[in-house]
Length: 311
Image (cartoon, rainbow, N blue to C red; front, side, top):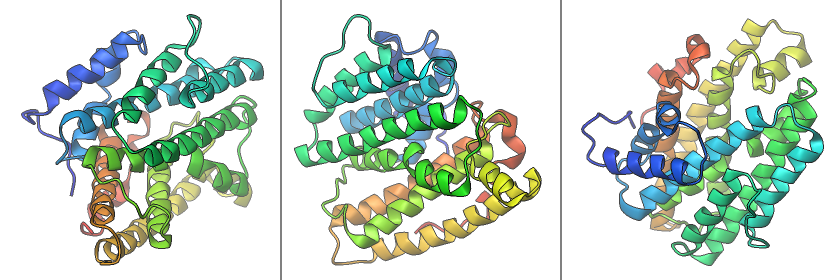
């Protein structure tokens, strides 16, 4: 089981300095120390216990950048017009795809994305980058849609709307690809049916874990969709979501075990399954203790004490 790293983790200083430098260099946050106090570096170290070097550094920068952009959609753009939101999303898409370079007036996240894309393309196979780019573009579109269609008008999604948008907006497929990077386990079996089932389960775990940690101001959650659609009290809706999370943890263990035991799959794929297991456990542990989620501490991942053993 992945645990948050102890202070003496020899990788911590280098990774923290790299993340802080990244935030400072591109002006992504006015106080990098305050932002990193949420524990993003600790999460990455716990999620990728055997990772080191350039791959760990790159995966961590992608994670930090993604949280920054997520916060941009959730807070900075909250009061902006649909046009402003769309322009920000378009600038990300154009720079990520290499159609243009960032301009002087572009958001700091756009400038940071250009550097990340260049660093990534220099390190990974082209097929991996094209796959990542596809999922990154889908994530940007989903984040934009959630903001303008639900968050800004303060509209709670139906369960159907939630289930159609949340798996993409949750960004867990991107996280799975960070696992490939950090663990040096780029899989040739990404589109295998069993691997896809594992990835969907991994995504569900991350989304539900995050939903249960959400503050009352966030109404785009599984519990809110269930509460409105079924007329359930909030407490009962959260209990139902918790039960779904616990069931999904057992399903994930089943699928993870199947992938790791499948001799027909590439060795990198079997290593990826272990890395996904490490990441989702580290994410649950971090969500329970991170100051990013403290207002919802009473609801955070109650199932962690009885999770299935490592796959």
